[in-house]
Image 1: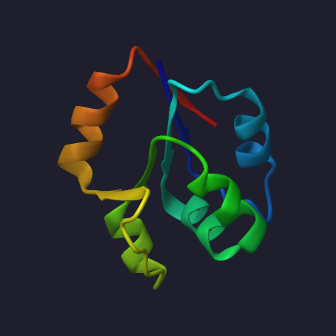
Image 2 (image 1 turned 45 degrees about the vertical axis):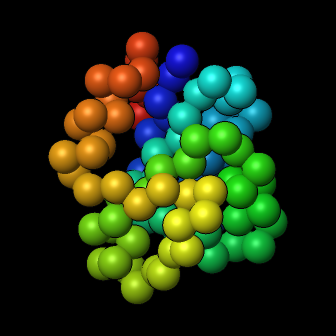
Image 3 (image 1 turned 180 degrees about the vertical axis):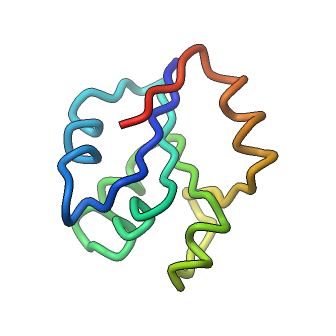
Length: 94
C-alpha cells in the first residue's frame, strides 16, 4: 500500500501520468499544490474518478479556485494528510 503524492501540474510535468501507469489497486493518490489542476482536465479527471482512493488537499484546491464535489475524491486538510501518510506503508512524492 503506497500513497502517491503529486505536487506538480499535469500540464507542465509528466509525474501524474507516470504515477497512474504504476499505481496498484491498493494504492492511494494525493494531489497537492499545482497537481490539483488535473481535476480541470476532462481526460485526467475521468481517470482519477476510476481510482479507488483519491485525495485532494483542500487548502490547495481552494487557493486555486477549484471546486470539488466529494463523490469519489476526498478533500482533506493538513491534519488528515498526516493521518493518511501514517495509514499507508510508504509515501512516494513524485
